[in-house]
Image (cartoon, rainbow, N blue to C red):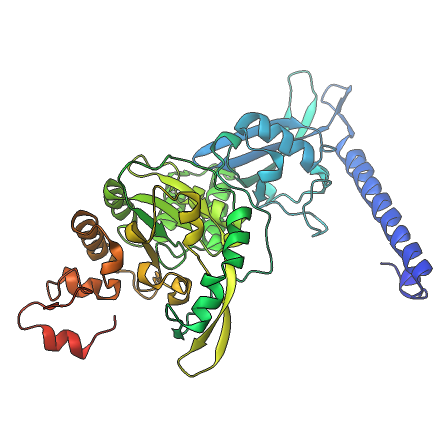
Length: 447
């Protein structure tokens, strides 16, 4: 806002005048900017032997969408981002409202919105601007912008809830005492108020129909199956674009981008999911917003892997808050993943008897403690040689083959079962431990 606006009175009328003045000034600045650029880029120069040639201005956009490259050539600098999204939609079937363009910046550092013109975009380097002259002497200035396109085609979309920004992202876990049958548990489960509300508001869009006789595996993403970093992908993709713009061999840069993506997966992830899919129907339930959940699944290739498929995906908008008591006696409010929402939607298919929920956060099991299997949180820098999914795959295969009612199993002992120290069924009494290992397990009952 200019100095005259800053010095104006703070009354409602003056504030409205300030807003109008700012909007008018901004519009005038943009118009002037376009005019200046067009004047600078449309010049007359002398050709050898006399005559003149006109330097024209054209923009090329190159979008990287998954493994595809989409080019939009010979665009006018007065084209805006909304028009670009319409063009991209025609080529990808991704609706404009679902598109996210990553890597574009403006000269004035303002946010790239649908109203921003191509003339306002800042090229990544001088190599992105070239001059080409036709045989008849017409010189054309070409400006290229490379970016990443995120978005799912409408035919493949499964759920698109409105973002609830009030819900938190994943944070560190804390020890809770929230047992089935307690007053807190009854307050949230027995009354069923939140369950009914969120069951009604959760729209499940099926990707793959449930298969007859298959139990359900609900999977968390962050630090359970992967350690995602958007910035790492952007850095690798930027290096790839620069290599291409400079005319260098892009094979190494492309390989680096793919390697960066693969490193975000927990070691053995694809093999684990392929093995699990043979015995279970798979569902992803992530405590993140929809836009980043979609980005993760697309970038990591988890929606297109031919060895496994997901029935559907849920995000944080299907979670609601409960109050639990930590072991220190302090009450804490946190969000949970109530499996009852899924069971209410598929009453003849899944229930407590055939559902296992994998998560690195214990508190997410608060309403369904007998169905939660806690895995060790994965951080690729801390444990690059992690082998947890290998043992977990063996355990879950054994569970699906040998157990009809999952509520009869203590999932917290899964590592001891895989090691042969403990039997799979642990809630029906009797000798739960393998010979000679009962004292070892008893000395370390919690994993």
